[in-house]
Length: 438
Image (tube, rainbow, N blue to C red; front, side, top):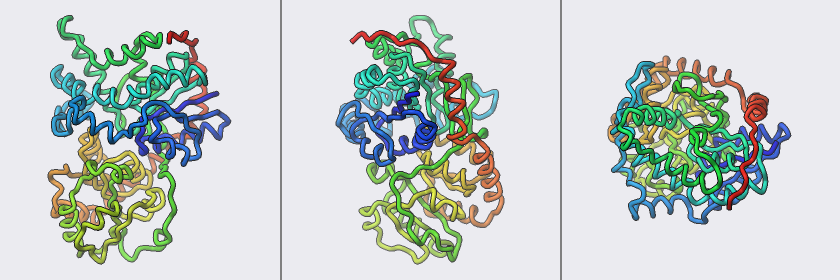
């Protein structure tokens, strides 16, 4: 069958999809990856075939322009981490978000980001699907253009998650609370936006355009939220992009090795950094006396601004996580899908410092599973980071719990093993094409 993979132009989100893409390819299926021009070199660097859709404007510049123009609320105007709390409640009898809460999240986060990530590629992607006629479209969890384009040609489509499925939880809360409102107040910005694009291409709106025909989830059971969708668990397999393994990684460290990483996207996005230069310097000074080999990945220009590098610290611009993580006794990271998933896979205790939307849920799961510690960015001073690393290195329960979770990850179906299930689901869902209207 023909499989089209669709993602907005963010390389770490692409990397999350590459192992499954290659599993489908080596099973004999034709696979192409569609994204905007800014990502094409990264796609072809994975060995996959790229298809260009959308604008030539790089995503960071588009987001900064949206901030300037007011079409995307700045980070400081978004709902703060941990609020509203019901979104991050993992108890089975949790109370759904209130109408005011969930509507605010939709208006300030969900709908503006959907427009930003999808509008530019939408028409081109539909044209690509009409020309190539894929049987299956796999789309990144927020790249709704993939669902609309797939439906326009009668293809089966599925979401591939990169983290905890907060989007489905928000959608279920939204529909539940909206049904309780007076009919005149039942506004649905996401449906309005999806419907607008869908109708132009002869597609009738359904919740499948938001949720997919099914969902592929790379997180183990303790990290999966309960919802009413068909969900396929898939073992997380790391992909780091182009990488050369430094020889020193293979040498046995003289002290416990600790990795501090902030993700490959931080090289292009200074706004994503959890720490400023002064804060980073204070942290390095505070842990300088700990018996460890601290490996810190930082862009070269950031490294140059540090005044001191302790003897127990090695600065690197990039190291492949899949190579270094198995050698680590602990990892401090920003909560990205690659860092979080790779640490789980290799059973490494982790310290997470993050301001991402899914951070509070990950914090709760870290506590529940006992695999590590966490801090909010505003609480991550030098003393707090030092205390967290000391816990991870000296309390063996974190290692035992992390190894137990790693075994659970490895017991999940691999991308290769999942291919046959996907083939069967495509056969079950296959529908007829919608005539072109453009």
